[in-house]
Length: 104
Image (tube, rainbow, N blue to C red; front, side, top):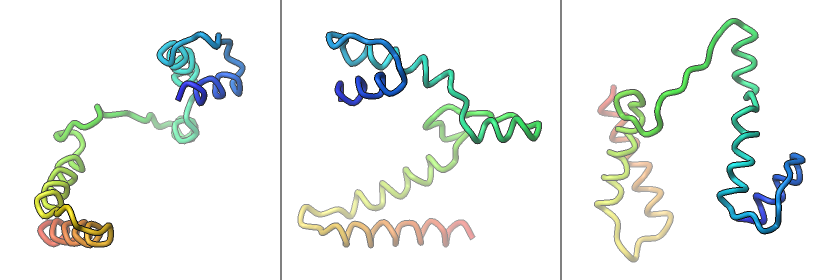
């Protein structure tokens, strides 16, 4: 991970020391990341719109969090140690179908 952060600092021309810890490297990169305007935000601004962000994992503001909680609960309760990936995938598909049928 540290090497990846160092490579990104190099790519962006951000000065760093090989002795810097990961958190120091991330702080340096974070300054750059927060200053970069996302393309979609710039596109929205060009049309007179403002992109607003909601807090992550906040179920009242992001109802999909409730859906994910239900799906993970259904799939998790049916999990077995000997289950194959395909069986887990099928359980996931079935759980989504059940939630979708309840919503309509």
